[in-house]
Length: 362
Image 1 (cartoon, one colour):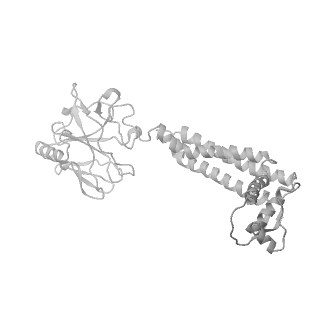
Image 2: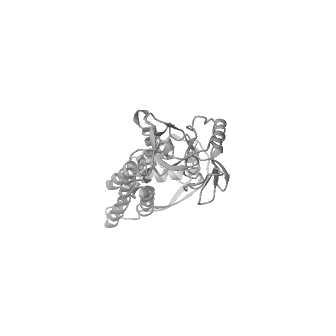
Image 3: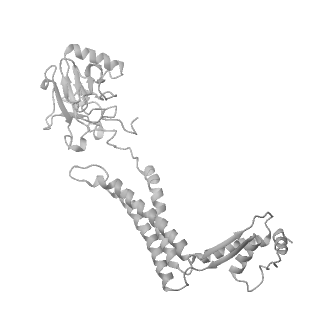
């Protein structure tokens, strides 16, 4: 006799033979509970099987699961195909992150409310009292456990309410895809490839073709166009090079005086930028490293570049080192040279990120 049987005998109850023909699954479940010293004192369905109330609740839960599936599918569509990059004249990129948040939130709410409604309204109410006990697992216990699991599946009502099973599957399948999408997407496509946070319009074109420095009207710049001590704002000579699409590309091209150019070259050599200048000409990003304002007020006598927003100052002859104000990082320098036709070109893109710091910046 097992420990559970002995315990039942001590309580004056005769244990049932779980293999007796004619026992219902609930009888076996109740017997299993008793052998675990659990007495089911209250058990009743919340709705009558096949009633209008049951059908109404089934449709409600199914609608929640289907809403989950629709929201998760919308999340995937937005994640993959919605235009997330800035484009002049279009504002769709501003809605990318909010739409992802809304669709994912609706999907999670649909799952939560669907499961809560299913459990609170469709599953039977049960009150059980359990005593603590110790004992080994017998063959009968294993039979009872198996029947209990099957009974729980029956009580979920998926067989009797196939709409719930279909809607649950339809709702959760896209949610699984939502979880996998960012992980799989990162393996398929490099999220940092051609990232505007790391590149500007001066990046060499296909085939390694170097990009010319041009004025705002698109005309290329020669060394003779800038007098000694003067400066000129230049842009990449590419399509939309002067538009907001390449808003991080404006560059200040400065013609230093001889003594200042020598000092600047010495500073560049200390930083490993000895070949960034061409003659007495140096080019620095015009985007302030503090808050991204245009640092364009150049003091010819002191070789300081002032940002008008928060008064940061950069010493051009010391590799644009910040010497005053909140900026804490140098202005990146653009490597330049002159091509065969006598026009300034960028030898490469900026070797440092331009503008303020951001999380992914090396």
